[in-house]
Image (cartoon, rainbow, N blue to C red; front, side, top):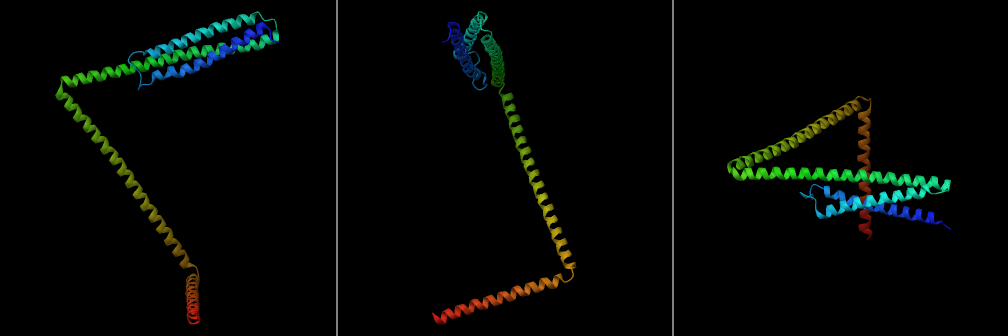
Length: 227
């Protein structure tokens, strides 16, 4: 049967592991607030709530760690104490890592929000300048169009250059194949008796073709007269 001290240790460890899992889940939710496409100019109520939940869980885990340490110091079982000491050290390491992770995500959100606010301010200033200076706005528009046209021309030139390079490569390959074919034909013509052998092979094929054709014609005639 478990002793009351052992029961208390097991219950506290179970609570610590549960809070560690909850922390990981909240980290995933909290990190979403740093997404540039959805970040708000100021912290939303949901962001503040998630951050407060994380801080509260970390404080509760700190208190659990202290209670585990107190139970460990009062344990008389040296073997069990060594194992519990390892467990306690692991909980402390995870808690420290999670505190660092919270600080990292908080800084990431702040950086993303500052960047988004800066971009929004710049866009607002540009819009205000163009509204106050229509001629300058039109000139900027024409410059933007010119840049887009130049980019399109650059892309077209790049595509044409690649096409010319591929066509040139095909030409080189055709010339290489033609040269190989000429060398093969030239080498074959220099072998004694090769031309005569090829002629005899061709004549034999023609003779065999004539014989086969005559046989097929004879078969048709026999079928015609006997049918």
